[in-house]
Amino acid sequence: MYKIGELSKLCNISVKTLRYYDAEGLLIPDEIDKFTGYRYYSASKLEDCYRIIALKELGFSLDEIRVQLTTNDNEKITAALNAKLAELQALIETTQTQLRKIESIKNNLTKGESKMFNIIVRATDEMRVAYIRKNYLSKSDAFDDIEKIKSSLPKTILGKRKIIINYETEYRETDFDLAACAEIVGKLPQPCEYAEKTISLGANVASLICKSDELDDAYKAMIKHLDGSSYKVCGAYYEIYHEDGTVELKVPVCERAKKSLYVSDDIIPFVDDPEVCGKWKMIDILPTREHFIYGKPKCNHLAWLDEIYFIDGGKSYWAVGGWTKGQLFTYASKPNSIYVNKYTIESDENHKLLFLEMYDYCDGGREGVFDNPEIWVYEQIENKHYASQEEFRRCDNIDYPFINDENVIGVWKVRDFLIYREDFDVNKQNWSENDLFVLSVEFRNNGVYVSNTKEATNRATSVWTKGLVLNKREKTASSYEIVTIDGKDYLFKEWKTGDYSFGGGRSYWYVFTRE
View 1 (cartoon, rainbow, N blue to C red):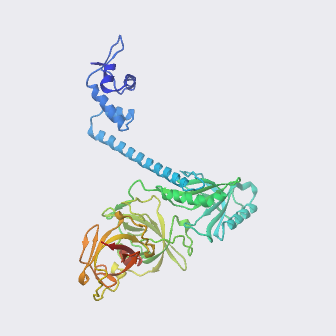
View 2: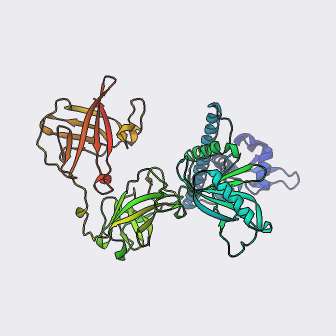
View 3: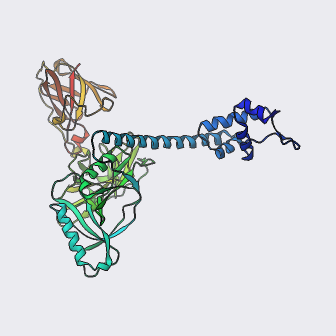
């Protein structure tokens, strides 16, 4: 048996700490002399000491360690280790987020930005307003309307704040889609030319404080901050003006989903919806349904599913995993899995619109899907019933004779990938090397074309002739051109995939250099 001092030396735990462990019921002595009060420990207690030390180094609390010391069940021990692993992983992610924020703030200050805006993400209180929404040539016109609202309402129901809701999703210099709002604390009189709205932004709201003359810089800071974070904008921007000139800039945000949003592709039965059958053309991409105004698109960037076809019987094609009434399926990165994207249809005399709650706008395998879907808006342009994808596949003429081109013969190594050809810059890399699917291409004599990709080398489906690469399987003709820049040859080759054949006729560009 060892006295407490001897055990302290053996396990390098202080006597004070050993006494504390005894008081907490964590490491109880085998014997206590009833006359002297001396604690005695058996040699087997060394194992408990070592276990306590090891678990503390892993980050376990004393309460968690106490549980571990009372069990030898491997399943329970493994469960506890898994729980601690998840806790530490979450801590790593939080720390990495904090590091990115600190680095971003430091970089902004060292680059001469005049002010550091403190941006926080928190829940926010509801607010009731009287409002009017329309297109304004300038924001000052919206403020004029706020003053009209305030002057027309009883002072007893007016709050202190003025609010502008900015429904634009991209930068504009004029013709803004805005709502001019005055806070109210009572019911609007009836009849009233203004609408009543309760502003409820949700649990996650990114907010900052600024002055009215700092608002442009505040928008830039907010957008830059969110671009470097795990959040995504999922609503309109709210400018809340206080009487002393203080402005709160707020925007609802969503996080990446904590769990997978895809499901197995064989569990959802088909229910017919004749109203949705046919061809639909994208007209806008929005954070919420509330943003939409027909004829006033907010988004000018590209989407991979520019066109949607609903084939009879809910059949799948390309990246579309089929459909059933109220739902369109798109394939997830995990095999045999799909995202379930809900749709609703709205019709008037002139337009038939489909609002698609789109989840898989980013690759769930790499970046993760956000909790809140984007709203992809489509207009029906054909109500034809399609039996298969071959009825609408976009095909090129590939019946060209071989014409030699000595300049292109040889191996070309990938240099970059472009959405628009004019985006190429010899001093800039648009896509990282790890994200490039095609690694190299080779033009051989007599029209033999070899494309070396991350998956395999394809020798069978394509041939070339002067100016064109002809894919026999996909029935596409992709142009190529050699351009000399600063004395170096660059091969620009058109890239046609399902986006071209099924998604709206869009092609992209690979750029190569001679190997």
